[in-house]
Image (tube, rainbow, N blue to C red; front, side, top):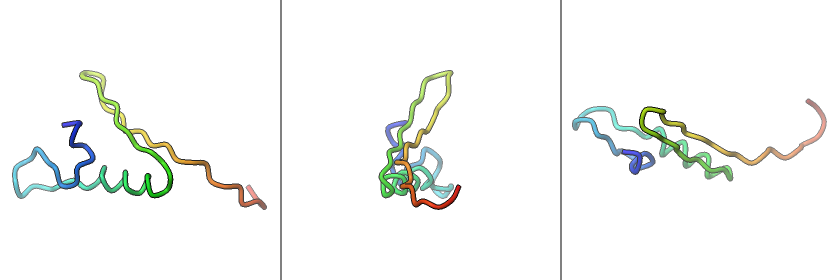
Length: 63
């Protein structure tokens, strides 16, 4: 199923059940902002979804 993790509306559930847009939508937002998103998964170890975003520019004046 990992191959379909970023495929909109893909689900292994029965028809009529909730369809996921979470990961595809999140990936689109991350990439729109110059970042990357990936998944690492290993049997019996779990799954991790990671996001890397560029640093925000320093706008000066404050903490």
